[in-house]
Length: 249
Ligand code: PEP
Image 1: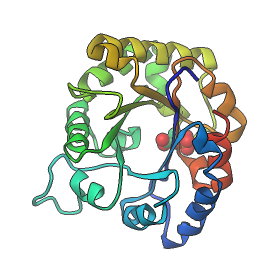
Image 2 (image 1 turned 90 degrees about the vertical axis):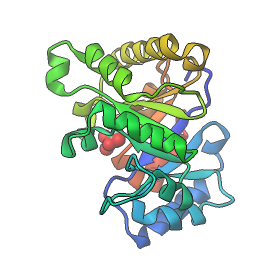
Image 3 (image 1 turned 60 degrees about the vertical axis):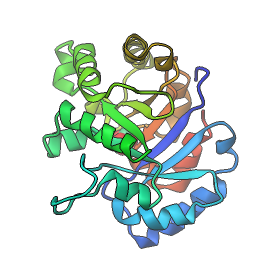
């Protein structure tokens, strides 16, 4: 971990019911130790943001959301705006997750609008990028990640309003991870892109690694230069795993 205060963020995806408050309660109970070294964020489904944001008050845990509509309000049935999520107590929004890019056809331009929407609501945008297996096999990883960064990140990014998550699509939910050297190469490339575009601020924007992070591999991945934390899917659903990963930074 290099200099910057790490962020350990959990993405619950489409998992969690009211009863999941007990898992959150265990996270709150155990957060004190890990929070001495890292920021801790849980992004439940939108249905739980309000209740979870209330539950974490007074603890070091923060609550985020997983997506938003670019507009603040209007005729968009079924969508949720950044302003609504902020009003419910979210402090950050994940945008451009590969599942949204794949399942909902989200383009870089739309992801950029969503990141801008998060900022408009005074929330942190966690912008996800990452290559597919085919793109990796074709040697296109840096080209793909560079294009996603250029298209998805709005102007005006700062260390306070932006987090980038590098999530190789082939590593998400598969149990497979890149080697530390591969992670170092991509994170180093992302760091270069950020500093070229946002100057000194780019050196302080956190870059998370995501994709099959678990307690057994967290320490090795978090030790890679320019890895400033983790975005965790499956393992963030269990308090013991989430806290073990957070404790590994
Ligand atoms: C994710 O979807 O953001 C993710 C990293 O998932 P997992 O940890 O389950 O691979």
